[in-house]
Image 1 (cartoon, rainbow, N blue to C red):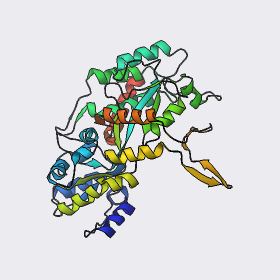
Image 2: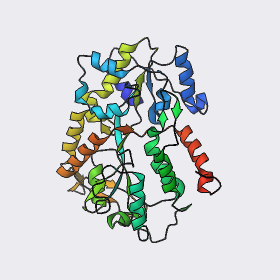
Image 3: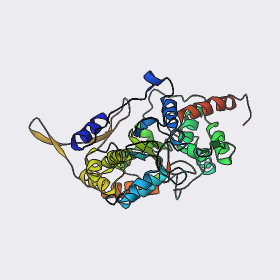
Image 4: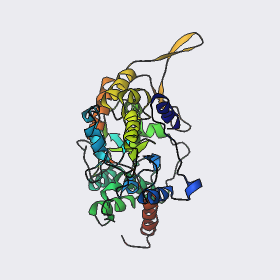
Amino acid sequence: FLKKVSIFNQENEYKIEIVRYDSVSYGEDPYQQLKIEIAAGKGPDIINFGGGYSESVAAGSLTDDLYVYMDSDESFQREAYFENILNAYEVDGELPVVPESFSIDTAVGLSEYFQNMEEWNYQELSAIYERHKEDHILYPGESKSDVFGFLCTGSMSEYMDWEKGSCNFDKEQFKDMVNFSNAFPDQMVYSEDMKIRQMFAYGTALLYRSSISNVWGTGLNRALFEGKDITYLGYPGIGNVAKASHIVLGINANSQHKEAAWKLIKYFLSEDYQTSSATNLPIHQNALLHRIEEAKKIQYKEADGEKIPVVKELCFEGEDAVQIDCITEKDADTLLALIESVRENSEVDYSLYNIILEEIQPFFDGDKSL
């Protein structure tokens, strides 16, 4: 982020000065210090919420609605972007922040187990697991707390209303999630000869927890399952969700330099920047399509006087990596369909998440009822 801001400073009349809000300077919750400063009419003009962003951080009108800036700037074309990804970061119809780029968090399974199940719920997941649990596992690492954590982090937005400052954990969907998670052992037991990669290729593991952070992701997943038909399920009741890169930008509602602040954000959203420098999947459509076309071509490097293909890898500790040297047209179509399917983000308030984990443990231990 610092390097990219430095490039902006060199190319523009505005000069951006970086101020760090971190645990060293501000204790365990630097976001609270930021909120205090903004409430007092102070704080930085532009805020990069970073990897710790969740709707709880932006709640309370700390930042301006970026849709206002986008729609009033004649040089900015909102339709050039994946608007459903922007919509996934809305709060009460406004856009308090914009991610520079994003990943897609999802779950993948062999289609033979998950036919016609692009949208699913916990009852269906439970039924499939019950049908196959004698000779299958859900995924490597399954345990009560791990399964619950995996499912909860992907669906937290369903239970929170940050604008109203309220939550509802009495929904049947949440109860189904807890009960499903409780069916697993307290700890996953690994055998010495367990080959995780083979478990996906052979279908022994029903689900692969996948985070697709670049245009190679769907191709690598195809190779992991050795070309068999696979289904992208996402999270029960939610589907596939967006996860922001470490650059998540907003404009302080009290800023005295809003024009300059918007110019920096527009720089991060520009097609040139998105094509060449976006950290993960570009939010600009043409930039993503450019990267897809590049990924369809095999790239070569020189080694000992020979040209050898440059490969992308999906690694599993102690096992041979999954490798591909390009993506196919079908991989590209799958990626675009996944992006278009996203309606929610998976940004988690970890202070709240830790409370939930602490409170749910007595149920898993058999000491409390649901």
